[in-house]
Length: 388
View 1 (cartoon, rainbow, N blue to C red):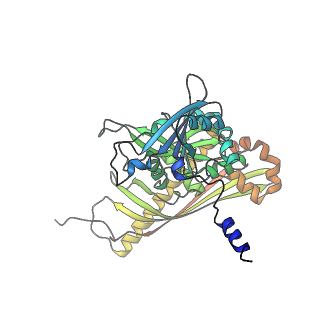
View 2: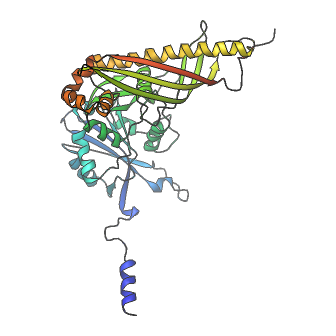
View 3: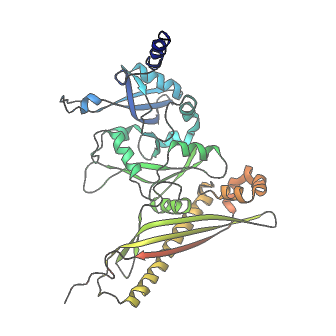
């Protein structure tokens, strides 16, 4: 018995046979995929971390990251070529973002990401975005408006802090929506925007990139993206944001979104006539009123609140109608999940139209119902008014 105990202790304390030490691997924090203009092949840019450059014990003039670019015909080939250009094997489990260029996105993303899923190279919760008007590799460079030292942290922060004028979409959701019928994916868009205050452009995450299956088919502006988020409410940023609109001449009012509850209700008559009702219920609170007037009485305040609710309902309805019209006429792609709602409620009807759903969706009638409730006006009952 005494001989058996040491034997088992050796087995239990021997460790993992395939373990890789952190000092032996190169941690990749971000990836960018472009199309090489000369060869027509893919170009992969990987951002490796340099932990020693961020050490508080030893000063270093080096950047805390290193970018490595290679070209190849497939993602598997690109990953191998990357290992040939750096003294450590790439480790992608801590990768935070994958950025693809517009050109790559229009060709289709599933053939590229197939390696990620097959070999479990990149985890599915990483943020996924599309660049517009610039290369994907350019956003992995150090940006002037970045507080973080590492561009990957900066980009990840953009997705984490996004509100409903943008889209925060991860790789797992892209797999699900591009592979399953009933709803097409929409990714966040990263652009460089020039401002008068700065000579260098700023990096922005705003708007949405609409896909049909895994191929990019067009872009949405901020208003259209907001409406898309109001209809779907599937992203972590869908309940974050503020609605600003004109109120009393040249003054504006801003309402903060508190909660949102959308629903898509299909209706089938005569076995073949399909229609939808889009219902959006929002609870808001007043963040700012620019007009200056004396504090209202409770009755006046109730009347003002009712007016604001009706005005907000009109604003929301117009934006929702705008984005649905664009999806039907320009994209001809169901990015909202109308098909998924039809499949859940009328599976037999869905089976009869699913193979031609893009054409069906482009012509399907719909009704929009918006219900706005303003919960409170903050710490002020009315608005500020100077004494005469």
